[in-house]
Image 1 (cartoon, rainbow, N blue to C red):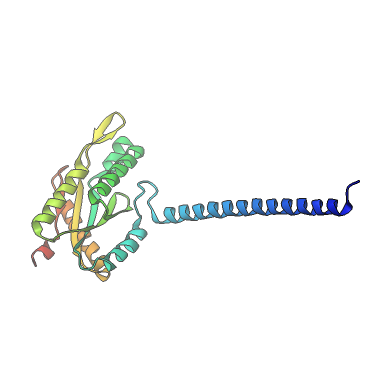
Image 2: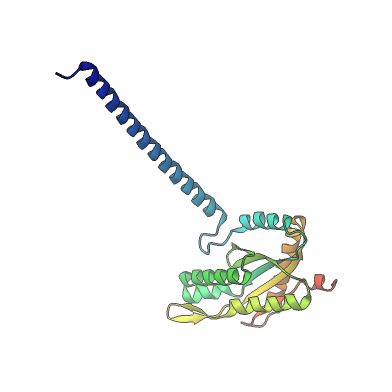
Amino acid sequence: MPDPMSVASGVCAAGALLSSWQLRRRAVRAEAEISHLQAELAAERHAASHDPLTGLPNRRAFYRLAAALLTDAAGQPLIAVVLDLDDFKQINDRYGHAAGDQVLISVAERLAGFAGDNLVARLGGDEFAGLLSSPTVDRRWIDHSTRRLAETVAAPIRLSGCSVRVTASVGLAPVTGPAQLTDALSRADAAMYQAKSLGGARSPRQLVDSAFLAER
């Protein structure tokens, strides 16, 4: 006949093992729930700061990130860039909004490739912005970079059954500190609109911040 004390001891040990196993299962479930919530939070933060179509930072994130970059720039020249597509409405009217979306995605990819590790963003609609590091603010360097950017955007974009070309008007303005960011973007925006008004039909158009270059 089994010893009652041994039986009781075995029951207690089995109960302890079961309790420990249940606790481990609860801990694993809790860790999984925490990981899931953290992933959801990260996704929500990303969605709140990024353009859903192109994946670039949105306007709010651009200003926040640009201010941080300017704070840490340590005197390195930085150039604010504003880029707006020319006659973009014609793409939507002729090929449809799905084609227009594809054009915006392609332009965003080209702008990001041109900028490399620098900050670029979609401000809204067909307007993009960037904050690019520059080895110099020499006029020749800025002219060359502006032409390269305009040519990069103007390369053919493949759509279903056809290819289209879009051109962009570009405005640039140097910026040296967080307090000057808004002013530099305003000057770049004004230069972009002046470039748009001066440009020939369907040709690459760009305008350097001439007021600043005159001081060099």
